[in-house]
Image (cartoon, rainbow, N blue to C red; front, side):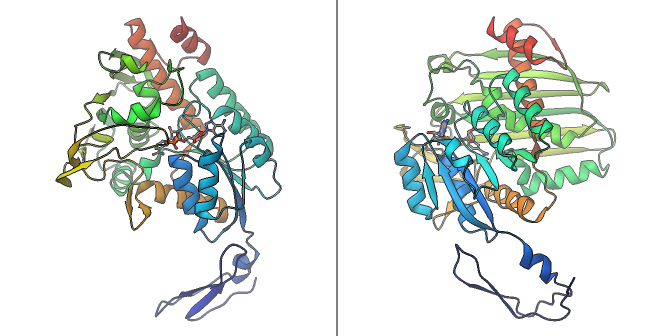
Length: 414
Ligand SMILES: NC(=O)c1ccc[n+]([C@@H]2O[C@H](COP(=O)([O-])OP(=O)(O)OC[C@H]3O[C@@H](n4cnc5c(N)ncnc54)[C@H](O)[C@@H]3O)[C@@H](O)[C@H]2O)c1
């Protein structure tokens, strides 16, 4: 391998999508640059299925990632998809995701379709044998989620799931302290998620089949994943007891809140709670979270409600999550800034965790970088646990874990 030793002042990159770009390394010394490796790296072709809020964010980031040379898009909403193609100057658009996945240029796939429509495109991408970033949840039916996981595992595909909050500095710092033993063994944890009802209103707008679009399956899954990830491999749930209420959100075909307590194999307890029926006037535009984790030697207490950056104005603030077709008339004069989980807009660009997550995934598929993305196995586990909370609430009884997908679905569908 040819190596270069010395000081580099400028490097010119040429790609098919990008004009030559000169990157200046002022006084920085790069001791060793593996020129051959860089030169031999192939630009990737990326397929993005689903051109809504999240598909738009991720494909806009792809446009600026130097290792991506081709972007194809698919959405059943032709106007929305064509607009995105135009806005980011993508290479291809179709209303048929199978047609996109079959394109010879495709090396990786992002599944950013609606919450309940991940399974078919994911299985089609598995057949293609390429790495994937799949939005949560893996499915909204535990049997289908098991089928998806089995297909991914059998094909030995690097598939990750979009648990975006893992990419925030505060949670990475927490994880590092727990992994290195700074609080000892975890004995008790508590998670409280509060959400403005604007978010679920937007989430359910495209479907009438809302049986499994519950607060835990759709949104609590983020904080459930976070807490389990922080607690680490020792946290093996053996039972859950939960209760739900639906006074406000039943009109939308979903529930208001689900609160539960998990017990772990080693006796640790974890209280997992979400309520997504807060009034539209609530200053948290989308998500507010508190997590406390107590160990044998210490504690980590995380305040993530976003009450530390408050806007108060006479100019009405609309919804932060504003997908195509959502027509909410809200008058909010106070806003907890940074409470929209993917990030915030500045200068026409998204800044925040979804940017970090997406760019890290591009590094993962382009240069093989190790990243903290949730695996498909973790995505499947998360769905089973969120649904187990719903089942426990439905039965009014403790549910023993692990539970088989068939038993879970039979209980929820009965
Ligand atoms: N990572 C995060 O922080 C985060 C935030 C919000 C939403 N999400 C998840 O991202 C996904 C997308 O959410 P969104 O907010 O972008 O929703 P959205 O409604 O804005 O976009 C979804 C798009 O998928 C399209 N679609 C549905 N079925 C399709 C199919 N079979 N083929 C092609 N296109 C299809 C719809 O037409 C729509 O345009 C969901 O799973 C959601 O749960 C993740």
